[in-house]
Length: 609
Image 1 (cartoon, helix red, strand yellow):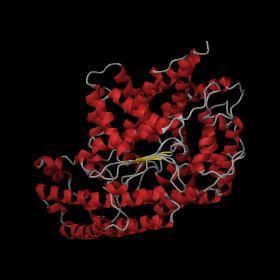
Image 2 (cartoon, rainbow, N blue to C red):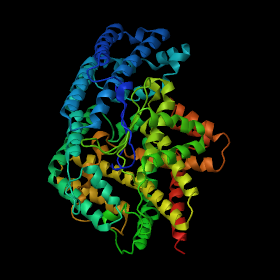
Image 3 (tube, rainbow, N blue to C red):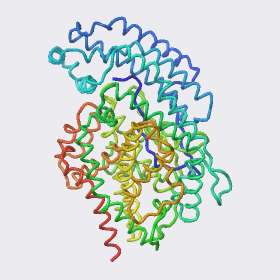
Image 4 (tube, rainbow, N blue to C red):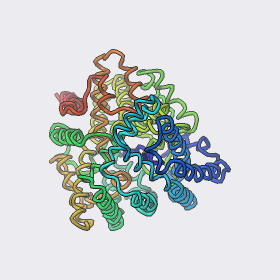
């Protein structure tokens, strides 16, 4: 159990803003009224005292607690987790609204420093708990049903037993965390937020979001200009980005070595509560499917575009017959909520307060963090969703995706702070399912063959981005961390690793412009959450199998689905999927999910006849 580690669920494929109606901003007052509010100072003071009191009361004494006393200990720890999480959520969300604001950056850094210092006395807790004899712990759980409820938390904590260090070393790592990876994360975020790109044909320099958005422009020259502008700026800063990756990968290697982690990926698998062989089966199934998925689709797209080869700026290009269209915010909201409501009125009802109570920050603003995410904050408040909305149809799918996370987080909150947090592999379930509901609603409403083709092609591209591209990212990370163990990596070394997975995953129809080799530099997941990316492919494959069960009329699907979301992190993926007749540890499971993507491509090919 780690305090205040409820990471936002990030998505890097959103866009940036314009005149799309009134876009909502966050109202963070549900967390705290203001940075200088007495409530914020009060909670900081309480946290300091509560952590010290917890250590005084329990350090060195866990083995002697009976079941009711152990339950009280867990409850006390959970209360501390809630307050620390609330404080850091507020500081972090304010910072993400404008990462270039020095006052916000200082406020977050100071809060992080204080909370790290206050919580250092708690480091003993997981270490001492993990030293409890198995038979003794089993007896405590058998004696108290309320304590037994926390068994999934204890199981995840005790999975780290072989990898924990001495109490003194663990306290040292905890203390220095703010000047380790967290500091490099901030440097990356602030650098990215400050980058400006001079794109040929544009009246003014653009930020990262607005420039990436041009890669989906109807005009091919505009797309090329954006790609080349990205390459120029990334190359200018490539030494800095290489330094960030070298340092973080080395820091991880050192800690992994001390913890005797068998592979660089092991820590992520443990955190996700997923077996390495399940991830390997997923990875192998996707890589084996590259020819029938991405290679086949992009060859088809080249034909539609009248090209023999595609350039990287064509990858997310709209189809030639696709009419350029901007979707205003009200239409986006209506589309997604109606899709949710068609599945279940309850789902639309759960989504409603995100729109009406300031739980979404949608517009692109100077200094705002790029991408999109849903942050659960703490179970006593509610989640917040961040978008960079620019009115593209793809942005509507991003809204559907992030709202899915939000609904999931609201439903799981009843589990309480320690049990609500869902492993990343399962955290993508409701988000991808929400996208699928929205897509199916749009597809059912298609009035012409051309409209249906455009929707299908858009969905296939999104699925390729979610499955093929993310597994390629995972392979890149595996290669990068393995190579870093052999020594310092130059920018050219990292560039070569990036290109090795791009050609394999995208297929022979692509050519790669000079400069594309640096495009690894802007992917935040590599910096913030190593090996996070396979969770997207896991979630997509899982949802495809789930949706097939729903479409086949599985009895009681809606109730089973809500039960799965309400479970949060209280059940293993095997338990959660069993009611649907699914098992992610079966290698054939992943082929089911991938067959949905290939089926869509089959339909697109049939339209050519």
